[in-house]
Each structure stands twice: as structure tokens, then as C-alpha cells.
Image (cartoon, rainbow, N blue to C red; front, side, top):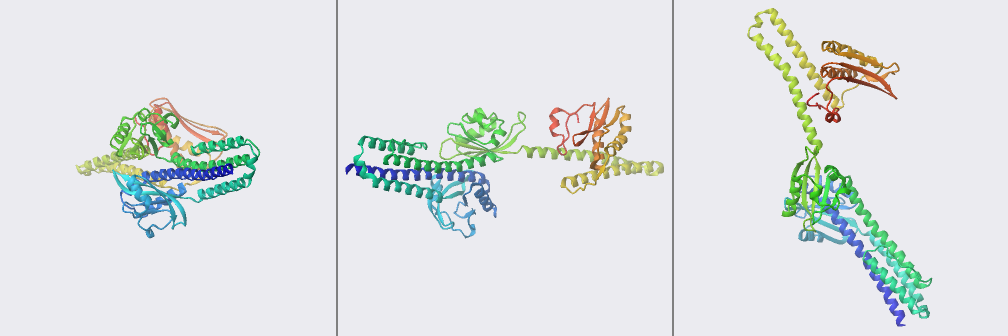
Length: 531
């Protein structure tokens, strides 16, 4: 009788310990997941929350992150007012300063709680972290996930344990006739497997020694351990989704631990730093980052425990410019997150804009200076000479026409850029768009002593094109070739390549520097030095 009672007590203890282990493990993983998501949202929205509650912006951001993370997202002001909510009208929500997770987050740096939500109608786990900017708390980011799935798994697991226990109790009378040694050995195997499972070994299994009731119990345990493994793997998949979001971010994210070693880096950050995640993980930050300004920001953040911000320009080593935000992480002393926002394209566009303004100003200055000189000449007495006055007025008219053409080209460019320039498409022979502009520029080539030739393949089909604009393109290319070819020849060639017709202009001039070739099709770009 004592043996049966002891075995029964062991089975009940196994069931209770296993259930508790499942709940602890699942809740621990869920807490880590919630706090990680809340920190991600808080870091991203800290600037917006620092400036107060923008009208509707934080609400929209809450809905966007809720859709990305498949969770409920709440953004709370430092006074407890709800600034953004994904599952409810924030204007009708109560002040959240008294919520347990919010109080704990403000007091300890992070907070969690499990309770029934009257908003969504089921039990949820909440995770909250304070959002800081410039060393002060500007709000709280809270993320919540339902416990329905975990509870369902728990119920199934408890039913399985209960069923196994009932079966075992029904067969306990037969244990008296069994040899005690195999029984104790089987129980010891179960105990060892449970200890390994509790320690985190999700593959801990029991090898059934017999085909009797203890063997059934071992197989039942294996089934329960399998279900537990599936539950934990599902939680890890959620964590993988978060990693997927980081990998698709256009901003770079890099995290170092308390020892200064890189523990996380997304592809965007690796690309900006000219490396790969595989090369830098586990290495020291100062070995990975060669720019001393970024290293200084990182060291200052670790030493002072304050957020540091700076503009990093990697030129001339690499044509990359980014805005760096270095923030200390809570929970580990010396841990730091580095956020890199790529500004390279913005800087390039600003350079292009300045060059364009300078080029247009130069083009306008020449005819304006000529007009001013002609007008001054007329004012100084040329009006008294009708013949000279007529000649000057004709020159004035020519310069005005030049200005008119320049302004017209600018307006045409504006229409093309805005997509409002209609194309007059028609099927024409290639010669119709190549020969006229070439012949029009032949006198210019002859004055420079250049040979200008045209080669048209005999098998050229009709093409669908806007004749005027195509002629202008060909004229621009040929004029550019003549202008930058001091001697030699310029060849215009049209040939069929597959289903396409290729028109090319080749010259023996100075050429385009190799470093400028990738940018020749950028708007307003003008190569320096040669063309």
C-alpha cells in the first residue's frame, strides 16, 4: 500500500511540477517578447513622443506597429493619458497611470502584468517600458498579447496529465506484482527527464523499458514533452518575426553588450558600415567600426549612460552619410543600441540641386550680361546711328530669343519631371530621327575639323517614338561629342539588337571619367573635370 501511495504522490507531483514548468517557461518567454517589442516601439517613437501628442500621429503609429507585431499597442503620455491605442478609441480610455505594468515600468524600468482586459474581453499579458528622450521620460510604450493559446495548451496538457494519472491509478493494484527494481528505475528515468526538461532541454525524452503501464506512462510523458516543445518553439517563432522586422528595416540597428561586443546587427547597419553580420557578431565594437567619431559617440554613451547623437560622414573612404543615435540599454550595464539613419541619398540630392541651380544661373547670366552691355551701348549714343542701333537691336532680339529658349527648356523639363508632357508617338524609320539632327550639326563638326559619319544597319525596323524629342536626344548626344572632341571623328550608329534598336554615339574625345559613369543618367548631373 505504501508503494502505491508513494508512486501516486510522485505522479501527482510530476503533473503539478510539469504544469508549473510549462506556465513559467511560456510566461517568461512571453514577457521577454513583450518587453523587446515595447522597447523597439519606444526607441522608434521617442522623438515623436518627446514633442507631445501629435494629433492622430501616435494613434496611427500604434495601429501600424500592432499590424506588424500582431499585438495590441498602447502609447501613454507621462501623465497617464493614452496618446495612441490600436484596439480602442483612445479618447474614451481612462488614465493609465495606475495600471500595474505602468507603475512598475516607471519605478523599475520595465513592467509586466497579467489580467483580464475589459477592452478586448479576454485575459492578456502586458509589457511596458518607459520612453526616454534627452534623459527624461516622455511616455510609456506598452504591448499586450492574449494568453488564450497558452491557456488552451495548458488545458490540453492538464487533461493529458489527468488522464494518465487516472489510468495509472486504475492499474496501481497490479504494481504489487511487479518487480520493484524496474518500477523504481522507470520512475527515476521520468524524474531525470523532467529535471532536464525543467532546465530547458526540450528534447529530454524517456525510453520505455517495458510494454506495461510504466511504459505507457513514459510514452505519455514523451507526448507531453513534445507538446511543450511545440509551444516554446511557437514563442521562438514570434521572436524570429521580430528579427525579421529588424532585417527589413531601412534604418540600421546595432546592439553591443556590457563588454562592448556586437550581439545584434541588422543588414542595413552592416551595409552602412561596409561589412556583413557574420563578420561582426561577437567582435568588439571598436574592431568593427573604423570611424573614430562613431566610436567616440559609443564610448561617451557607455561612460555617461546618456543618449548621444551625431552626423557621421564616412567620406572619402566610403560615400556614406548617416545620422547616428546611440542609446544605453536597460538591464545590462554598458549595453548600448546604435541606430543609424542613412542620409546618403538626401546629401546626393542636395548636391545635385545646388549644381543645377549653379548651372542654370550660369546659363542665364551670359545672355543677361550681353543684353546689359547692348542696352548700355545704345544709351551711350548708338541710338543716334540708325544702322548701329538696328544692329544692336537685332543682337538684343537674338539674346531674348536665347533666353526664351532656355526658359522654354526649363518649363519642358518641369513638365517631363511632373509627368505632364504628352508624347506624340508614331511609327517612323530610324533615319527620320537620326539623320536630320546629325546633318544640322555637320557644319559645327566641319568648323572643328572633325569627321562626322552615320552608319545605319539595313535591317532596321520601324520604331515607335516621339520624333521631335528623339531628334533632340540625338542632337544633344552628338553636340556633346563634338564639343568635347578636339580632333578625330564622331560616329553615330543605329543597329538592331534582338527585338530592340540601339542608337549609339561614339567619339575620340576626352571621354567620361570612370567614377562618373554610374551617375551619367542622374538628373542635372554634370561630370567635373572633363564633361
